[in-house]
Length: 181
Length: 362
Image 1 (cartoon, rainbow over the protein chains, first blue to last red):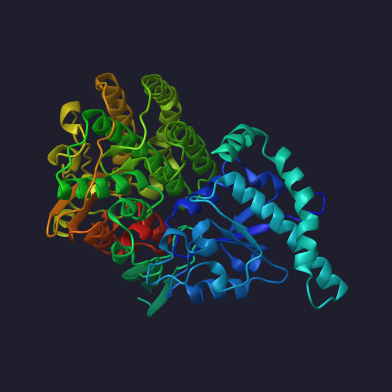
Image 2: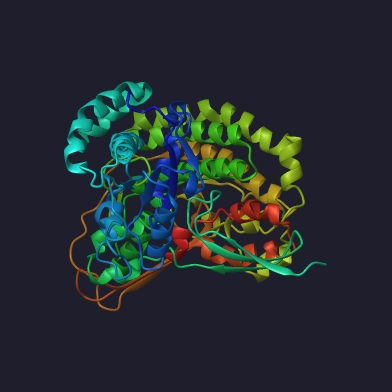
């Protein structure tokens, strides 16, 4: 995580989710997982945020709100889809009002599956997103137009996962159990 | 008096993790009218009965809400079991009751944390959620999930919980009682908290009854209404307890009801664990729900009365699955308390009915 030189702030929005992933997003900020020690703050203002955490499968009425929040965020920005509903619609995919995933509305950088997504998985997803954020930032500074996300992401993946492990000392045992299950 | 201004509240608002939109009509700092508009989480899952069979439907109903997910799964199972005339073993009834009460503890602790966040008491928020993690660990150990469990199925429980685990559950809960007490004392005794909550958002007994409020909202206004005692689900009838009622009807009264219910739930779990019989936890359920067979059941969720209805169609698919959730019933009470309140009190008043928008809109 050496590339994280600034405090990444997150904005969270519930795009038609069942609450399960939302309370897990909040649980990441609580003393048990405590991502605030890395300077990650949950802000209510999209204009202050670097990372956009979206949960839920996004319905017709929510699609404009999700798009507005995304457009209000300054560049560079990263979108993390939290939970299986946000990834592709999940159990509600067949419902008539559901668009089926966040990527039907805005571009998504990271997908975190799970029902509900576990806090460890969400932290992993955000850490991976921070690598992409850094790549985007460098691309902006260098004046490059196209961001080679496909090339950058795997390169960031390995150090990101290594870095995530010591970050979750207290949660390591639970993480192993979760992996087996 | 100044002229009327409309302040939009939500759908994306820091105080609520969920989207609801209120148009607050204010005169100076006073709210004169609140117009709610909903639909941000409507998924249309009642219509999914056409695509999911009755066993799968339990999973769908469970995912109405990630906070009271066990109760929703239980309600769907009860309705389908009723329509199919399935008797479930007694041990399963006990296990369901125990897990439902554990869910109530987790839900109320979560709400206490959000409430503290609502009036800006960040450290209290964090401490409530820290204690809540202990309850989630119990859930994870016994069911495999932290917020969505899928342990309830038509015909009983998917797996048994061993007696050692149940005893450990009681020990852990008694262990955190002291911690919960020290947190809830802050809610009840702290001067700055009292200033925000005592006398704010008063809902009188008559108003609560007239607006059909449910759960802790109505009990905080002095109405002794608790479906755990009047309806026949679970084994509540054998446990013997009194509904918790506070008279004042303000935010503090509703908070006190929830605080006392946390301790009551711990006692109920302890009693149920001491009485639980041996035996199987599920019966085999085969065949279809008969055409026209229907069943209605009401369940006391952490937020109040929830209603489930199932109707068979003679195939493995149901014809209708209807759910009515507690927040739906509490929104009229919320709109009533918002009229005439200070603008700064709006977040607290919205939180005080323990709103679950994903339940409401489904």
